Amino acid sequence: MIRVAKMGHASLAISTSAVALFGFVVLFAILRTRIHGVHGRELAAGMAKVVVASVVMGSVVAVASHGIEMWLGVSQLARLADLAVSIPIGLALFYATCRMLGVSELDMAIQAVVRPIRRRIFGAQAPRT
Image (cartoon, rainbow, N blue to C red; front, side, top):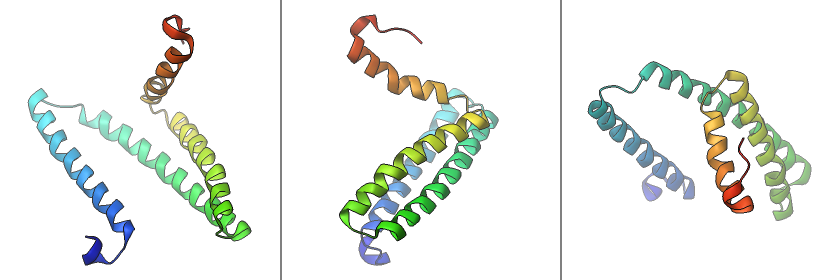
């Protein structure tokens, strides 16, 4: 795809995403037939909420990144500043939008990240939340 589309390294990311998406669809179809349903409406509603949060986050981060590029240029230090600003903004905005839309899996995802860190810091006697 890199040579055919002449998109350079961007086509590598696109092809990787396409393969992962295809794999997901195939595995999802197999799982659905094996367990006789997967609560499709709830899954679709949750996915729609996450897509909305992603679009909001991506739009704001793109505008912020463009603004930083206009302000600081395209030097390596400017790109580092762009990352230092855009990543926290994106993370906070995605979290806030998901929380506002009522994404029920958000707390589960946060615990999946926080629990191992807590265990590593506090050991087996980690405080429960």
